Image (tube, rainbow, N blue to C red; front, side, top):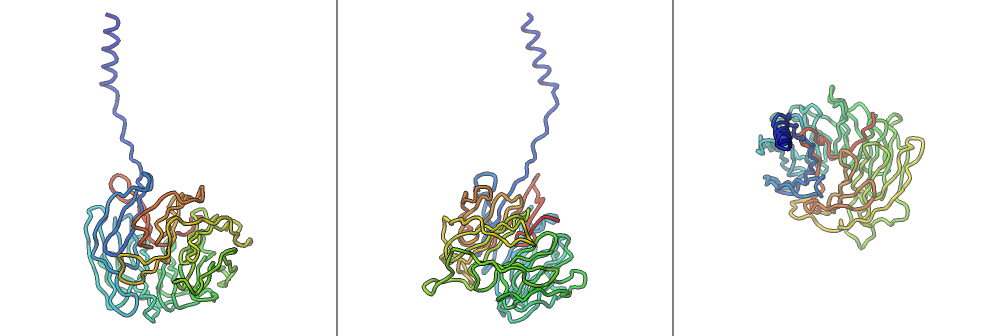
Length: 375
């Protein structure tokens, strides 16, 4: 009888015990864009493919997103003198919101943190110097910024007040005010024309690759001048027998804590790691050389234009990983080894992280470049 009472009590306790809330974990996804598709990989489940989605794109130039509006923005088409295109994709409802064609080219764009304006470079081979301001709601051109020649790469600072402008044909960085839409500062000259770049959180330092240099340069933004030139020691640059990009280090990424810089090495299929924790008084020091498992020496496929696997790098939001475009390799920043592979990223250097929770995006890369997060 006593055992029966105990059993009854346990049953009652089970019935009246309040339900525990379900765990709402954050999903960390990497989005990879080739010509005509994007692919989504789960960073917390051994980089498993979550899904692939078809898009009406050919010659993809850039991809960024805005979490608060759940919108992805993909540019494609001409980066010279032809027609450029931009589409907006609703990430929650999985549909295209709008698609625009322009009488100007497009390139690697950014979107303002408040999701209001897209800063669209007019194309590295356009011969011009215009960044177009396009409303994120419709894609309509609503203004212009006149910046460096060969508008190519773009970074918006965290508050959305400054736009950093990189021209493929220019040796100077341009920095524009979002309020005035005018360039208020030029910094340089670099030893050659400017290529992929990043900035620290306090906007005092610029790290940039340059045409023809296996290495990078550091610019003091207060002094508007080059502070350091850092070649990659112990490794040879391109030789005449290789089909090399004009920028052998076309991939540069600053860790969120601003202690390390990762740099691509196309000729040798490496990623090099530099200690930048003592900046600006201490010159960057190379601390690791990471051999890639999948070569950069190939042509992207499918690909409409600009197909050589010259690469791109970015850190994950939490700093755990570095993603290597045109290789597909994923590097652990803890072990400094290749720990994963995203097949679609072997044929693309356009990729961003978007994090989800409870069925909606809660964070997204509004720049293709990883910038410092120490403010």
